[in-house]
Length: 77
Image 1: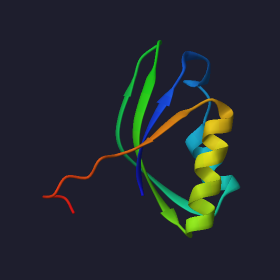
Image 2: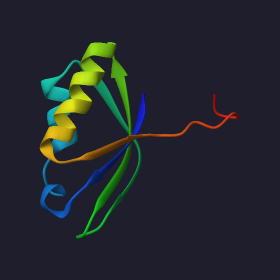
Image 3: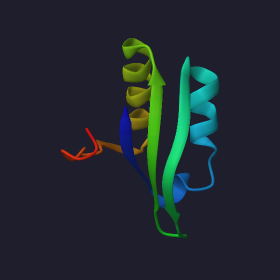
């Protein structure tokens, strides 16, 4: 599953993606990232069992990260 993660300034220096891979049985793959002092935007692939991926997304949102699905175009699918 491919997601956009938007990190607020207070979370930019936190290793949340690393923690995600430690806390849940998911494989993380950063596809794209843009980080400044004001915001962090990351395109992240999450692979794993559906329940683990859903729990990982819920945990990220609970931490304060805005999580949105990446729209997949006709060519990519």
